[in-house]
Length: 150
Image (cartoon, rainbow, N blue to C red; front, top):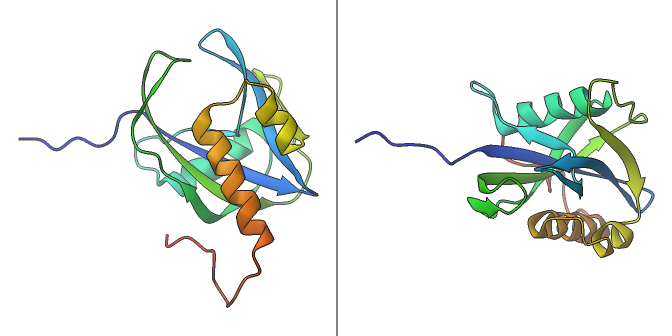
């Protein structure tokens, strides 16, 4: 019996600045959606490597995953009518997003409440944003706290 990994592993990052979150405004499965930057984990990549690559491809931003936020398991997406396995991280990064012309999305910082209230976000992404905001409010107790075990 061959063991198979999760279906369609996707990785997303929550980048917070000044109380706002970086959001990708794009089309997924023919729908206008708001989502977190990220995408597919390719063969030979760790989720963290894929996340850094996706931020660079989508917005020319160098990021560092700092905290694993949410791993809801394999889910059914009504947007793509298929299974996917999302993984969400908090990320740190400097600079302003600059979306290349070949990327069919717009990156912008939004108030989290505005993004959530739009009705255009998937539930797991809302959980990830909430967890990132809660972690940001908690003081760090010691060195290295909040870092994922990579």
